[in-house]
Structure formats: C-alpha cells, structure tokens
Image (cartoon, rainbow, N blue to C red):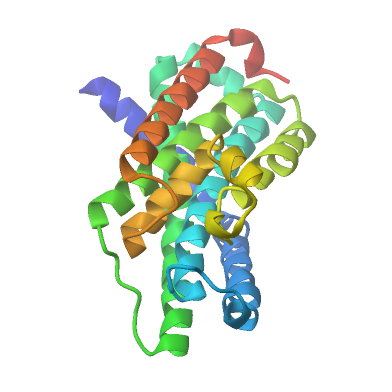
Length: 260
C-alpha cells in the first residue's frame, strides 16, 4: 500500500507540473484542433468523400482525438524528463525510495492524463462543429472499444516518451524524433483520409504503422467502422504497449541517462 501512495504522490506532482502552464499544455493543442476542424472539416470537407458515405467531419473527429492523445502523451513525457535533466531533478529520483517501475507508471499515467484531457476537449470542440454543420451530435457507437484504444494508445506513447526522453540529451533531440518520425506516422496513420482511396503500396505500408491501428480503433469505437479488423487492431495496440513499457522501464534502469 505504501508503494502505491508513493507512486500517487509522484503522479500528482507530474500532473500539477503541466497544469501550471495551461496555455502551453492544453491551450495550444485546442487551437490546433480548431484549425484542423475549420480547414479540413468545414472548408474542405464538402469536397472530400468517404466511400462508406460517412460525413467527412464525422470521419475526421476521431482521427483528431487520436492525434491529440498520442501527441500530447508523448510530448508530456519527453518535455518533463528533459526539463528535469536540465535542473538535475531527475537525478534526485535515484536516491529516493521510488523503484523504476513506480517512476515509469507515475510518469506514464500523468502523460496519459494530459493526453486524455486534450483529447476530451478536442472531442467537445468536434461535437460543436458537427452540431453546427449537421444539426445533431456525433454519438459513440462502442464506448468500450473507444476507451480501450484511447487509454492504451495514450499510455503507450507516454511510455515511449519516457524512453525517448531518457535517451535524448536535449530538446533538439526530442524535437527531431517528434517532427521526423512521430508526426509522419500520425499523418500516414489515417487521421485525415481513408486507405480505400490510396494506392495499394501505401495501403500495405500503412499496415506496418502501429498508429494506424490505434487511430482506426478509436474511429471504430465512435463510428462502428474502420479500415482494419477490430481484433487485429486490439492485438497490435496491446503488443505495442508492452514494447513501449519495456523500453521505458529499461531506459529508467539505465542510470547513465539520468543526466544530460
């Protein structure tokens, strides 16, 4: 019980850290979501057609929710660790009674909290846009599936952010990974488009992208349809989480990475 109380204290400290800068951690992603909805959902949505006859705005909203959760969970973990490296706060954790597993779970869950917070606000903003355009709210078809991919996907990228943050020496390293690897994978994962209208090469390539399964899993939970089989998506997402968790745990046990 004492171990859980310790972990809860570390988790709360991490949550308070990002809540102290709400414009950066919550405000900026919300503005981005509004811009995406205005540009793609409203301005260009009428000229983009989905073969399943789903309104493009309805197709876009789950993708934006997934993108918000993935990106913010990852960014929270990496920025927290790099920032703590700069002030030697991360190194202090080595002399505390916290185990590597406790640190991993506390930082991963706090990153998930930020991701879910931004994702929920993105969901609310999307509902407003959908109601204005269609005169009704967008319902969630399968809440269990929706929460499975939302929570496991966000936690996976919180763990991956821990591993990348421990590996990186500076914010430049983290920025390079985010811009050159994470963002392309998000965009090619089906946030803005369906695989049905793509060349067969890109369809096959997208199936190698774990984000494709997370994004389509959230879309299935909201709309009841996706570009992949639900069971495959659930399995790939769970395996990806296990890999990310192990990477985070191994990186935290490598003492040389607690300093810059």
